[in-house]
Amino acid sequence: MIDEFYWRRAVVFGSVVLYWAGVSVNAAWVRQRIGRSPNLKPRGTRERLLWGGWFLVITVWLLQPLVIGNGGAVPGFLRPLPVLFHPVGLILGVVLTVAGYAGTLWCYAAMGASWRIGIDRREKNPLVAHGPYSLVRHPIYLFQIVMLFGALLLLPGVLSVVALAVHVACVLVKASDEEAYMLAVHGQDYRNYCSRSGMLLPNLGGNRRDTP
Image (cartoon, rainbow, N blue to C red):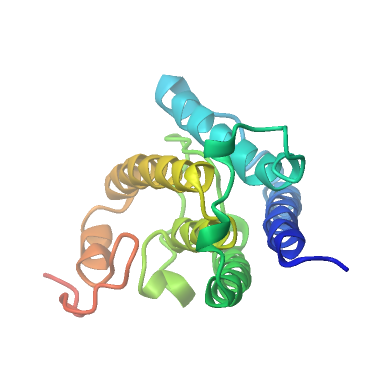
């Protein structure tokens, strides 16, 4: 009989495979629409360092469910803590994983051919402010965090915490860089947009009108 630990590992592993398969499909679709790469190659030292951080996150996210199935593959202190396994954590972890991926697909639909991975300052990308972007300026990053938090609930341990923490740190840097770029491109329109939206969470108490 397949035990609960197997299903926890299967959901985490399946989610990362599905997520990055979706990224690849969306990147190919955007490339076909715009006739070039959607900035898949990092530009400059800062972006390369961010990609290094995300490579660590993806490696942990992908390999942890595989190696922890082998009792001797990783030191005990890096393995998930069975004492933290709880049916609520399993259910909530699955719900957050599914919700995070569904939200990501929603973002892809809203962005359309405007979706990019990196920043090319020679481009003048449009300001997308509908769908999830009407509330949050970086919803894709938010939904990534939701999925990684789901992975933490499914496989609670040091590696999951490290992956989530590194990802959040990289997201904050990347989001700040993207906002500086969008401000340079769109000026006051982007300031108005910022006044009625949050970076990673909805700005529920903020100004919902454009500033003059």
